[in-house]
Every structure is written in structure tokens, then in C-alpha cells.
Image (cartoon, chains in turn orange, brown):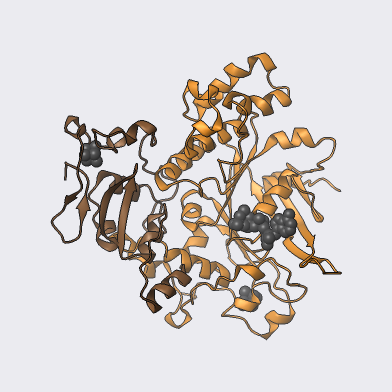
Amino acid sequence: MEKITNLKEKNAILTVSGLSKHFKYYKTLFDIKKNVIKAVSNVTFDVLINEIFAVVGETGCGKSTLSKLITGLITKTSGTVYFKGEPLDYGSRGRKLRKDIQILFQDPYSSLNPKKKIYKIVSYPAVKNGIIRKRDRVDFAVSQLKNVGLQENTAYCYPHMLSGGQRQRVGIARCLSVNPELLILDEPVSALDMSISAQILNLLMDIQEKTKMSYMFITHDLKLVRHIADRVCVMYGGKIVEIAGSAEFFSMPAHPYSNVLYDSMMSFDFKSKPDLSMKSLSRTRNEQEKIKPVKNSGRNIGSDKEYTKGCVYFDKCYASKDICRVNEPPMENKDQGGNRAVACFFPFSRPNP
Amino acid sequence: MKLIKDIKERSNVGIIFITHDLTIAESISDMTCVFYAGQVMELGKTKELIENPIHPYTISLIKSIPTLSVNYVPKQRLSTIPGFLTEDDFSDGKCRFYSRCFRSNRDCLKNIPLVHYDTDSRYVRCIKI
Ligand SMILES: Nc1ncnc2c1ncn2[C@@H]1O[C@H](COP(=O)(O)OP(=O)(O)OP(=O)(O)O)[C@@H](O)[C@H]1O
Ligand code: SF4
Ligand code: SF4
Ligand SMILES: [Mg+2]
């Protein structure tokens, strides 16, 4: 595997190239042939230095699988992940690289070892990576906990004694303890109530501003994407269908699926608040192109269906034409600014003035 | 969500939908009951409750949610409710939101009953409304 050399130009901390993961499984006990789920299929993108890169898509579209592939928690089927231009191999040298890429999981209730006191949990990666000596770990943990707004006595608690928000702070402290350069956040706030979620988001943004690290922020909530992200990547059925700068994306999602997602999120946004009645201003689409609500049949997403031909979104797309059935749309730049790539033959675009 | 709405429209059943996301509550419900520390803090018609929250807890909750509105400025710090719910908050003898309330004072250190507010079917558990 070759190094990536034009890094300066790209300014990328993480480059994912043609990454795939196929799960094989038996559908029923009596199946002879294994079925294949293409949970992640030929995914390519960059996360830039000091950037918050959001990955969004509905349940089962492969977001968590993608994050586990990058961190080496599961083995890839094909493709390459580059960290600062170096291909990651998750074997012998894996540990050093994994120190630079940390992952925070969604569920603060199950992601912390219930039998260990917090100071052990927080200091474990640092001890293991030889950053601190074992006997310094209490002091170390306390200082790390303070960084995320927790009190000293938290260090001696067990996870079950803490609230969800506190546990997620512990998880963040553990990730930060080894000074990573990339933090993967897999739905970091979706298990928390709204006010606590706001606290955690503020904390994450403060940390990012201070440390200039990069985040890959995985979520299914576009409101959070809008709030936090610099760039947005939309996944559907294990594939990326749109990557765009946040401002570009929210002024006009281009892929039909992005639009459905956006509209369904709009219906979960405050409608009563007066300043929210401006929706029409933000869209330039014609009235007759009004989007149907998202038909959510999670079963055949990223699933046993073989997407060998055609567009992943063909089955549900309201804009599809015959060509979409036979040809797979390539990821193409659709903006003059080059800040948007879409995998669709007929994306929405701004009407020419 | 769509399924639940369909069921509601087609049959006569009442649905109690429990969520921590007020935006979902708004899209799905007619009445909303805001719960905190085992007590109802505010109860009312969903639309009115969100347009015009009265209880400090409801106000703080609504302020903490990012939105998709075009006027929304990304990357600002979200407004939060300081602290978190602890076991002490469940004790009787004071307003259960006391420790985190932006409007609290000494008067709140007594039991606060759920009171009827002027519009019909709006109840609020706060003495400073
Ligand atoms: N170990 C596994 N074996 C078989 N199939 C799997 C396995 N892990 C995930 N899958 C399948 O891969 C697909 C993608 O799963 P993944 O967990 O990545 O989705 P996700 O986007 O994170 O969803 P969510 O939003 O619910 O977290 C799903 O269809 C899932 O059933
Ligand atoms: S390529 Fe065709 S089927 Fe696929 S999203 Fe675009 S219009 Fe729809
Ligand atoms: S009674 Fe006092 S503490 Fe309780 S919500 Fe009202 S103002 Fe806040
Ligand atoms: Mg997931």
C-alpha cells in the first residue's frame, strides 16, 4: 500500500479509500448459502485537520460499522484507511495508531466497565500506552476528570453511581487522556436528555477549539449536524450519497435521500416557535417536487439485498429514471465551489439566476 | 413515528408517548406533560406549551435544543441547565427543580403544588409564574 503524498494539499488527517465491510450470516438455520450484508460498501472520504466531520444516516446504514472499521475493532473486507497519509495496519503497529484515534460510544451505560473505579477506567489507556506510570494514575485521572468538568471525588466512584451525562464525560476524559488527534464520536448524546446533551455538546466543542483535534461525529440527528459540523457526509445503505460543507448542505441538500432526511428532520423540529417559520426561504425547490415522508423500512437497508447494479436509493427514490436502475451514479462534484459531491444522476441544484 | 400517528388517527386509542426529545413530542402529541424528578412540572396543550413555556424547567429545556431554522447560528454554545438530577432533588419539602433553577429563591424551599394557570388545561408547578 502506498503512502499518500499530496497530503499538504489535502490537509487530511484521515483518508478512507474504498472501504468495505461485508457481514456473512445464515438467514435461517437451514440455509445452505450464506447471505451477505454489505454494511459498508466502497466508502471514500477525508477528514481534514481541525475539522468536525459529521456522518449522518438512518438506523442500520452502516455508521457504527464504519467507525469500528476505522478504529480496527472489526476487520475490513477491502479498502484502505490512511492516517496522516500512512496506511493503517491494525496489526503490530496498531497500538500507536490507535492511541491517536479514539472512539467514544453512544451508550454511556454499557461502555464503562462496571467493576472498575472511575480512576482506573480513565487512566487505563494512558498506563497501557506508557504515558504515565501506574502509581501516578490517581492524580492523572483526577486532572483528566477536571478537564471535562467532573469533580475530584468522581475518581473513586463506580460507573453505576454516576448519571448518564457524567458517564459520558468519563468516556470523553478517557479518550482525551492519550492526546488523540482524531476523536470518533458514535452518537455521543443520543442516550442523554436534551439539557445534558447540550452540556456535552458544549464540552466537546470547547475541547475541539482548545486542542484543534478533528472529530468524526456520527449521528442520526440533523439538528446536531447543523449545530456542530463543518462538513456533512450522508450515508444510505452502506454507501455515501452526499458529502458537502455544512453551509452548502443546509442551504440545499442535493441528493434525493438527503432531502427526504432533511424534510423528515424538519418535521421533528419546533414548528411553533416563530423564528422557525422561515423554512420556505431556505429551500428553492418547486412546490410540485414536494417530498413524501420518509418510508422507513429499515429491513432492506444495507441488507441482504444485492446492490450489484444501479443506485442504492433506487427503490425509494421519487426522482429516479431508468438509468438509475442499471448504472450506479458516481460521486461527483456538483458545486462550482467544489465543496459538494453527490452520488446521483439527478440531484437538486439551485436554479440558475 | 408515522406508524404511531396512523394508529392514533385511525383508532380511538389514547397514546402516552414517553420521550426526552421535545421536538418529537411536538410532532406527535396533543398534550404534553413535562416531568422532572418524579413530578409533573408543567402540563398543557403541546403547541401552547412549546410556544409559551411557563415553568423554568420547560423554558430551559426548549432553549437547550439546536434547531434547523435558517436564522440559527451554528457552533454557538447551547444554553444548558447547570448540574444534573441527584437523589437529593427527590426529597420532599422543596421544589424539586430548586437546585438547577435560574429563578429560584428562598420561597422555593417549600412544597410546590401543581397550580392551574390562566389558559385552560395548563398546569404549572412553580410559585414564580
Ligand atoms: N456483526 C454483525 N453481523 C452481521 N450483521 C451486522 C453486524 N454488525 C452490523 N451488522 C449489520 O450491518 C448494518 C449496519 O449496521 P451499523 O451498526 O453499522 O448501523 P448504524 O448506522 O450504526 O445504525 P444505528 O443508527 O442503529 O446505530 C445493519 O444492517 C446491521 O444489521
Ligand atoms: S441516481 Fe437516480 S435513483 Fe439514485 S438517487 Fe439519483 S435520481 Fe434517485
Ligand atoms: S418553584 Fe422556584 S425553584 Fe421551583 S421552578 Fe419555580 S422558581 Fe424554580
Ligand atoms: Mg450505530
